[in-house]
Image (cartoon, rainbow, N blue to C red; front, side, top):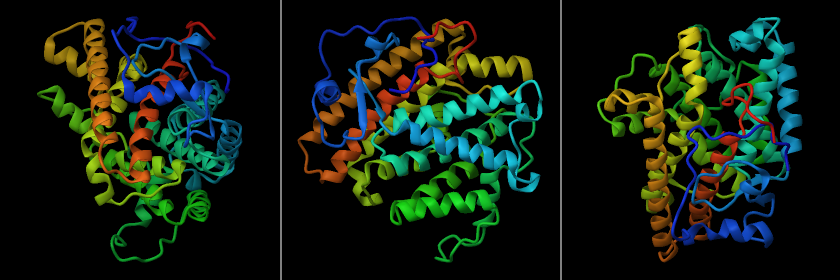
Length: 373
């Protein structure tokens, strides 16, 4: 197991239930018995590790290849730091501050490993390396977008620019940024089928962040916000990440029977992120004027509620989503899904559990003074 740097619960309300969610029981079984698809994982009960676990999901998984991911993220970070300004692109502002850059680098490295190793835990060694590098690029871009320097391109902004005019033409993309070029070549070599979809998923998310910069967004209902948030949450990338790490491939037609479950999963994924990241985002908003676009804030404004009340409501909403996910997964288990479709469906549950564990142990979200584990 990867060391746990901290553990916290942003709400402080324990989960209680009168019964089990039967379709989630494969996770509990995997703690002590082999379960197909989880061969590359350590599966565990977070409560046994002292991590608050307010959910009906009975366990979480973590890739056994997290050390490979750490090495890959560190290598890419050194490559970025040593590159010319043009190759680096815009970096998080803390990395230009002598007193903050070391801590920021540690935070980015921790996050770029912890997120994919816990959420997309089925990955083998080479694919764990790819996931860590992708997440480092994504989290660095995300930090830039949230800062005052949004007008300057990041590495993946530059990669997106290289695709302009090539959509649907089947032409080979000539990446001008050598860091992204090397990453793309590694990805395509590992998986020539899913690799292009994975890279496109990253760039689709980058395009979304540039077209819909947060800060001026207003929402009339929670559902309006969820529609926006799911788009902001790199859906294409997350879908491709499941396929890459589970070593499967689904077409859009293959995904259609999973549509209802997929919507529930992405809603759970994004709202869990909001719940745990709210205090970090609020601090950035108050101290630096950063955008505060978060479901907790949306509920505060819609209901004229305190932050604590909004968090309690959001936690209850997430719990209800788990009941709906269980019901839909149970329905799908009695349908005519292919092995790849069923693997994708089950992986969505694994990602939900991994996202809660990642979020509850994330230095990026935690404040100083929280207890270590």
